[in-house]
Image (cartoon, rainbow, N blue to C red; front, side, top):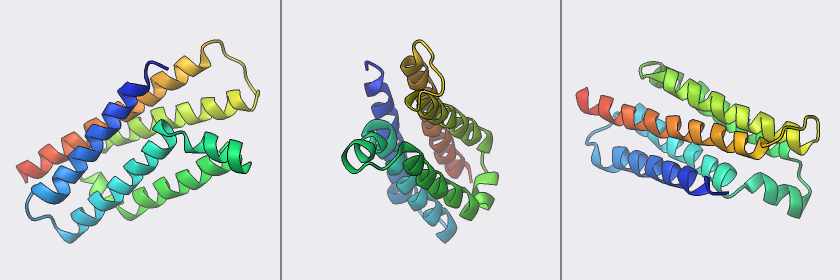
Length: 152
């Protein structure tokens, strides 16, 4: 789809922002460094799911259902947010919540339409819009976090 490059660019910029924070922002506390390394890992998982469509590969090649792939991914996200909740709460976390909300809507729509539970015309377009909104806000969160680090 023509929107694929938008998501790719947004997530690539996010990775670059996180790498910039890790390597060039100066002295980070141990907790902030751990948060950024975990954020990098979670962003790379987003790339695997959103850009490389790991869930489709696992379903087609290994017969692993999308629900299992998404569930395991959700556990990783949950643990990231649980372990770093204090760091996240200090930031503009509403952006992150909105990002996850849009990504969740895309996943939910994907599961419902792939499972033929609901049929929506243009469901792929709607999914892409949700993913673009989610990845845009994901990138904006880390850009905002980078700026906040400069102000501290």
